[in-house]
Each structure stands twice: as C-alpha cells, then as structure tokens.
Length: 254
Image (cartoon, helix red, strand yellow):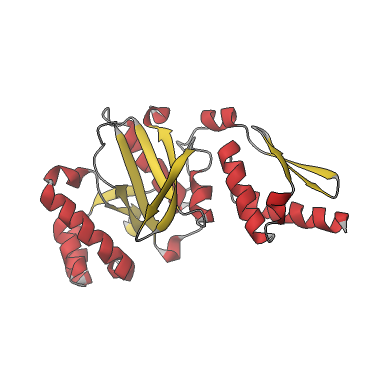
C-alpha cells in the first residue's frame, strides 16, 4: 500500500508541477495545498518539510523528495521573454460605454479592432462600469486602467489588461487581466503579465506590483510563478471571495 500511495502522490505532484515554470518556497506551499486538496487532504498530513529547494512528504515512514527551483534562482529568473507577443491598445471611455450598452459594432468601430462577445459578458460590464466611474472621478486614471490585449499584425483581441489604478502613496500598483476563453492555455496570460511588469518597471513612481489571486485559480498561480512574486497576505472581496496577495518589486524589471 505504501508504494501505491507514493506513486499516487508522485503522479499528482508531477502533474501539478508541470504547470509551473519555476517557483520558490511560497509557490511550493501553494502547490502542496493544491495537491492536498486533490488527495483528500492526505498530502498536507504527510508533509515533512518545505525549504528553498525541495518539497518532502512521508508515507508510512517513506521519505520522498521533489526538487524545486530555489527562491534565489526564482529572483534571478528573467521574465523578458515569452513565446507569445501582445501589445496594449487603449480601451477608451467611449468604447466602454458602448460595451455597457451591448453595442459591439460601435465599440469595435471606435476601438479600431474587432471586439468579441467576451467584452459584453456580465462580468465584463461590471468592470467597465467601475472603470468608467474611476475615469469620471479622476481622468488621470485613464492612462493606468484597462487596455485591450491584442496580438499579431491583424490586431486579434485576446483579452484585456491593466492596473486597478495609478500607484498609491507607497508606489504600489495592482495588476488585473483576463484572457478570452479561445486563447487560454496558450501562453497569452504570461505574455500579458510580462507587458504589465515592463510598464510598471518603466514608471519611476511605481515601487511595487501586486497581484491578488484566488487560491483555487491554479492557472493564475502558475502564471505568476517565476516572476519573483511573494505572498504577503490575504484579502476578502464581496465579489470575488478570498484572494491571496502577492507582490514583487517593480525594479526587478529595470
């Protein structure tokens, strides 16, 4: 039975680790939580230790080890390349207003690209309403908040991205992005994140970049792995529920 358990745990961890390019201790702990949830909680009960280079767990006295990338190596990993390339195009207040009205042809004509039904979902309209209110309260927010994420010479829209607003008093900006369903699991999330980090690094007023992610969102946790993000706390949102807060210095990309 011990051998069967070990092989099962190795398979689950290997499958989970395959979603991560590199990670440090904080990411290793999250991975164990994900695997533990899949294994009915047994993994967490058998965890022996987590350090900067390994995940270890025990099963009926047997010690198994999975090698990870160290925190130091994670901090040194470059995030300037991606197999995909995206660029940001302004999503103006006029475009967002048309999207709120459900008028895709008018929104697309004003934006200069073909927007899809993904931009008029209930979730999307909720975001446009918030961003329009932000811009009405302070027009300076416009240069920071949501943009269309497009790729290729034809300007195919694959999602949207931006910051929640300008940097706060401590120089912190929080990123937000979404990839349309037809373009997920193809590397576009990573490409968008790279562009957001480059933008933050180019702004002298930005000191810290934050990402808040649901603990159940394995894909987004995998996307930020290898970029130096460190978990610093938790946040509860009435709309999104529990979120894990991660931060990375903006100057890592300077």
